[in-house]
Image (cartoon, rainbow, N blue to C red):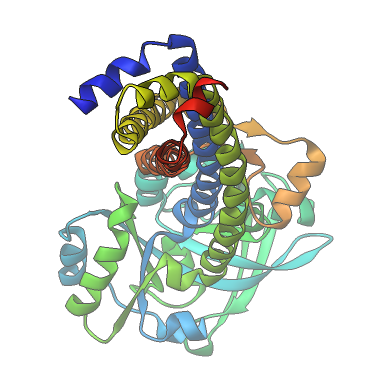
Length: 404
């Protein structure tokens, strides 16, 4: 009976209810939008630094990641290939050779990361050819290279020019080669573009004197959320000749950066929740003042104060839940728009982003948990604030309230 009466009271004064709903609605939209932007930045950072190149899970020869030496290269037998490809969640395996070499042009030299990659596999899983901004993609049997845009700008080279690579191969063998530049590739991470050189896998094996050997196997996922579970599973399945690294292990700098930024983000969110709380409290206070005379009359005719206070508490809870639900629904199209149309920064701001190895765009995340989380938090805040009129009514004097 009390619940039914509270629901009817909500719509007895529609204007007051709409004002309270609007306050909670805007609070949810604002908090969800802010958190969606932050999560969008994190997703962009992970996709740019991990998904575009490093992979969510890497399988290396045991000791390679710590030493970064080709002497820890590994074989890739059919038994391991079948086991990896049949692992639940893994959509593909990208074999690579990763090493360093001195890249030399006519005028400049720079230490670079040389990646021996199978052009067909890279195209199938990473669409590497779509990153070619000048020139053309290479083939499996070509003896040419793709150069990162940032590195090409530094070395003052373009497609058709020749690049000399000088390095050290497997078991201290000399590694030297002269290659025409087939194309220029651009990655979302400016840091990658400033140091990356792609070489066909067969040619990289010849250059570094390591036929049938590889340094890394990059595992591809349709659902990256499964990557951590898969990394744990593979550690038990693979022999000691291999080491399995989740991206949080082979890119600890990014993990620590995101963790530190999340702490800072929650400080800002706490301040936002305070602002939201005062906004909701003002609407609840307005409702209490407007209905003081009504409450005084009800108490005077014999209604128990706790019963009346409970009815008002239920009313506020109803409005809070309804406002939070509307806010979650209303926040989605806003975040969807900025997800499809991310904000692109000007040159000055873009330079700041590039210093941190990030793409200079700001998009939003559509993770449903963001909307549920923010709607729940704001609803809880509103319900806690509803305790104020509850305690106020339990101490209300009928004559004083009727004369207000």
